[in-house]
Amino acid sequence: MLQIDSKYIEKALTANALEELYPLLQKAVELEHSTIPPYLTAMFSLKPGTNLVQRQIIHSIVIEEMLHMTIAANILNALGGKPAIDNSHFVPEYPGPLPMGIGNGLIVGLEKYSTDVVKNVFMEIEEPENPLVFKSVSLAALPTFSTIGQFYQAIQKKIDELAPHDLPGDKSKQVTSSFFPADELFPIYTKQNAIDAINIIIEQGEGTSTSPLDQEDELAHYYRFEELYKGKRLVKNDAAPNGYSFSGPDIPYTPEDVFPLFPNTKTSMLPAGGEELNRMNEFNTSYYSLLSGLHATFNGQPENLDNTVGVMYDLKLTAQKLCATPFPGKPGYTIGPSFEFIVPAGS
Image (cartoon, rainbow, N blue to C red; front, side, top):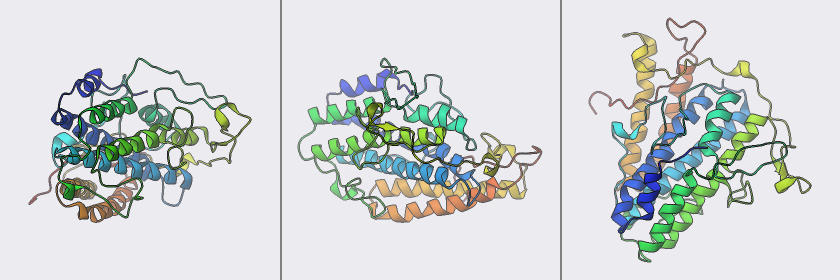
């Protein structure tokens, strides 16, 4: 289970003005983004046309992490703050802990897909305070630790306490998009809008205290990753504890259809002047364009979101080239995307 430095929850619960929540919501935007590069790296390492269920599940979670990032930015704007996306401090260093002192020793890197990474990293990131146990699964609950969900609940509680019914932020900065369902991404105009939106983030990530499903009757992230680890679908089973069991269809997995990415590839590892470096620079240029586009989207150009999401397609194409490219001087490895914040020349 991830643990958040308790000072962030204490800051939320002891805030006396909405302005004191601004840096906490900025951290929430950073946290939601920080999970996307590790998830995408694992997904990009799957060879095209193979391991389709793994690809579909990870892709669905990445889309929801982008949704959560957008919701957090909408709430920050609704309270009168300003999201900051296009700077080097926004991007975490991989491998390393995630934002807000999260970890309990967990170091998150950029690695190829494997069931070990799913279990030891991805499930750790998404684990709720008290994960539901299905069939033979046994996961220790660590109630003394603060989870991502508890952090959001603290912010939710303080918004409920301090905010007026109509929130003070510029309504024109609220981001909506046909890319996301209207009942998941909606304008945050009122206190209740903010409370409802935070519930979406919590339940999509962790499920509820009694069900692995979120408000849309879809498995929460933790249990989707657990499906991949177990290689079985989690399905409703009235005879099983908690009403579900890993007794559904098998999820096939072929490890040989995963590119052997060199873990935590950095631009500095590649020889100057080579095609490999050119491809990495092309990838990081697309990544910069994505972050720059999101910054503009969240700071007065909400109509830009659909175009920005389109940059993800460019990111995918350049990543696929990288993942299939042999790593110079490292036999048996290919190049992984580095997700480094590098401002292109002339920008």
